Image (cartoon, rainbow, N blue to C red; front, side, top):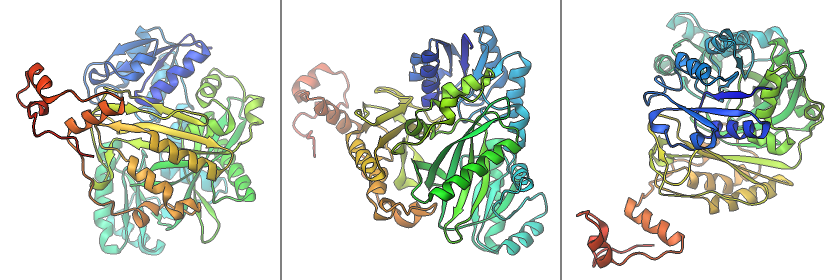
Length: 498
């Protein structure tokens, strides 16, 4: 086992890895940009190394600086988390060339599966069905010809990267050219790779993924599915398991297929095989394989009792698949809601700023993974994920009721969040029946309508009252503050409105 491990990430996943290291007796070393100097993941780690700059390119994407930090701190391994360099084959190769252990699959495996067109071909060669498509690489005329063969609408997708970026829908031949150009621009900016391909758009489908673990001896196991159909702009906001859409027979088939994909790729460590389930035909198709820990991994952890981060570390040092992992069975039902600092009423625009009040839920069957605390600043430089709220219960209905109560108890004042959207989602009869598909949000919950955002002074006053405190009198506060614009100076006019 390692003695010292560098966490090449930030936010909630860095906090999660630091806590797993602590439980395993490993010294965790965090990295932080200038704006993250007092972040929660820095406070949770045993040691921290500052990085110059604030942008991802200067800090968490700077492979040479990260490798030097690992060497200077005497670390034996690097855990990349998710995002940033987690699926960068060149980084994984450089880590191993430096004599360190990369917590993840081999660089060659990342490279094979990181290109979605190559991954589709690998699955096809293994006899696994893929969504009908066109691998790209041709002219605009070639794309148009192939799109007509597939039949509109089609989905333009980036060949490299993920997270919903570089994806555009072309509903008609006239819209294909703009979809291609737009997807290429975003893919180039996000991944440094503008190559795109086509897939037939399957409406009203379910997005189901299978968690797998593989060891260096070639053994691979499935840890069951997560249903990720509820998405905004092709990015997940709610995950659950078991999937309401699967029968036991279909669940077994998808698990076997996911293991076959991983074995065909020579996969080791934790990974996720993603499928699209066509409800009309009952058939499922391979989409891609993510060669890293997923954001939604806690759903599997609370359902099976398997610590996936600890498993990643053990597999990286060459330990075989544990009999306890292979024997794990899902118990009850689990849900995860992603709480974002974003405004659904403004096309999910990020909402950076200081967190004035922060109260996360607690109780039986409740888990919160977060990289923030009260007083922290949500930066413009990074992803807007505030927290992952996970609940588990004996069945789906009980889990839904628990999540509804948990969201009522959650308080975040300062940045605008998607909390209201999550509440409406849980209450919607289509989702309640277990029938939500990948087009659920645009079809059922939008337009969201205008949202009134009270000024900061009202939020601060609400936070004081929420703690059972008293608002200071206008005259007292006006006399104590030197701020000429303080609302407390307007002693006769300031009112706190419900």
